[in-house]
Length: 263
Image (cartoon, rainbow, N blue to C red; front, side):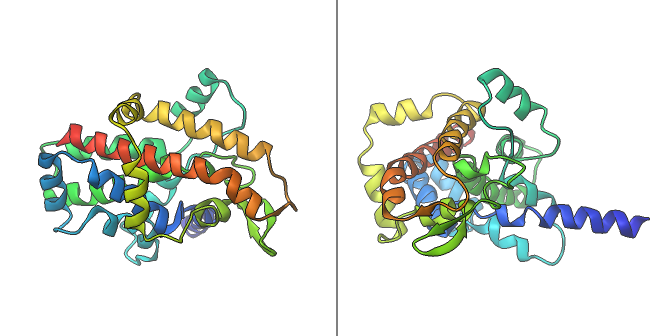
């Protein structure tokens, strides 16, 4: 019986592993670099200390990479990358769905990891691991296909044609709509450089449930504009690139705001 339960649990976890990659390495590094550029001096010193003197971008996709770990010490985090909830809910129903979700998720992770970093009783090792995760999951919180429908596994079961090749909608939002013509530092410098002080203050407002609600509304727009079998290419990228860049900016500025507040 124990073997059967183990197999069922394993199948459930790995049925969602295709949902794990959000924004790809490029997107996560852009977000992390924007965040690092907006840290206070005090926060930056503490962050770099916890990250063994590596830049934040270096660790930004670590939470994806550890799915290859064979020790099972990170198995719990596999479901922290996303939250799948029904489409087109009003704000009250949306929040109830998030607060009463049946398992740990990206919203849980962002709040839980902050608690670890604020707790004086947690070890340096625990804080370092929590920081690596937080860098990643704040990015995931801002990826629309990580706040998507359970029945299609966050767009993984919606197959479209992307520049002539079959791909699922989720993968397109992980990397397809992300401009890779720049290095991540160039892209971050551009997106961070155009933000005014007032823009930064506006972006910082609210808390993770407010930010997730923003992302969820974008998700609803994406679902409304595409269906299985659609042929997507340049026009789709043109339409959604401003949204992708906006989400990069939001995630980076908010991640910095969180860390400045903690440290």
